[in-house]
Length: 352
Image 1 (spheres, rainbow, N blue to C red):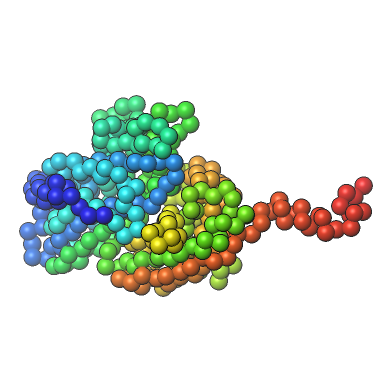
Image 2: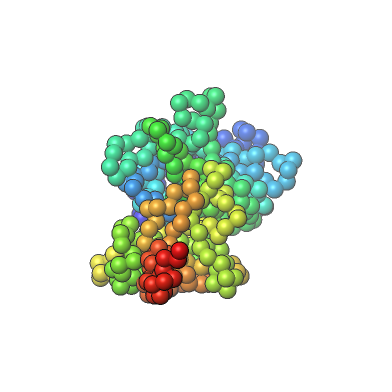
């Protein structure tokens, strides 16, 4: 997705103000020759039943790995609004902070500050009106006068004397929730931080026969593809849903939870395609799994999501790995049990 001129001008103005503020806060403004020019962008994984997710960012904090080091605060001259995070899928991303001088070295965590509520941040569902979006603690004015942030506890390194570009991937399927009986949505810290020079892309297709199979009916859109760490087939493990019982974006570590996902969309050629961008190159590799029913996946509950096929895939930085889903979904367990019963002798189908 291309940047608009207004957004680019805003980001450039933001850079100047950020550097000045950092000096005023007592941190390094990056005047040394070893500082690294650093940028942060945002992207998103899709979510069902929502048309627009508008988010306004106002500040980024960075914590050096040295426990005694001060937190570096980059407050924006003007808030940066992403009009619709849902438009930033695949390899699309939008910058929220560009070209700031950051002291090189290792960092413990990153915080992004969000201005919650209409007109700053909101959700427009497919069937409904624009609704307030808050960071937990902002709703009903319950922020105690303090700015609210999402913290990403992922270590990262800013290179000395060169440019470092990072992308914050918001996993909205896990992080966006609407509490029961509430008139607002909450955005929780379900995010990934990627160094752009270390990432590749997974792209692929889903056969039309898979989508049209009776066992894939009813289907949510064209289904979705989930991404998992490691080779699940080799480890004899099965994929699971986005269950996040603690509500803190970390997920349930007792199962194989997805780290990203992508919608399957029909292109102009009639093919059903998906793209998962910003995937870090690792020795362990990944697995992708296709499901017909992503709409049944809610992070507040542990759902039984059926996956048709699991494919192992390796990712190389700067390259695209291609996969194809061709296996039709298996019959639901209830149908399999019924078929088994019907094959038994009549005397064994209804034992006394």
